[in-house]
Image (tube, rainbow, N blue to C red; front, side, top):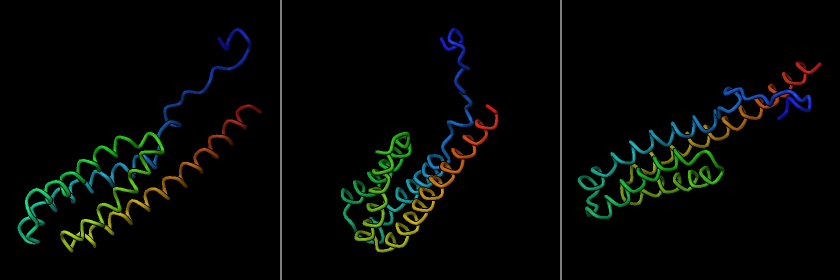
Length: 136
């Protein structure tokens, strides 16, 4: 009990717990899941990819994107997210347009990851400064 020893209660402000990096990366992965999932019929009809490989590649990667969006609470989730970007670009070997679409999503992912990390660092510094001023 922190009251018994005279220490202040720990700050549990929910605003401090929000992760802009996680929110932005999850949004990119969700949109990517839709785009990759919709690439499946394109692979089958336009690129003449057989049904099973198209379903496994397209819908499998779409499912992976959705699952990874939920895994972003740990750094391991971001590693798998980086790998999902490689997979999205690699879909270009089955449907050449996916080289472009995958590259766009990889760029969006990299931007969300980098910018989110920068925002998290700046927010942590701002909260630390706020706490320092509150103590004085």
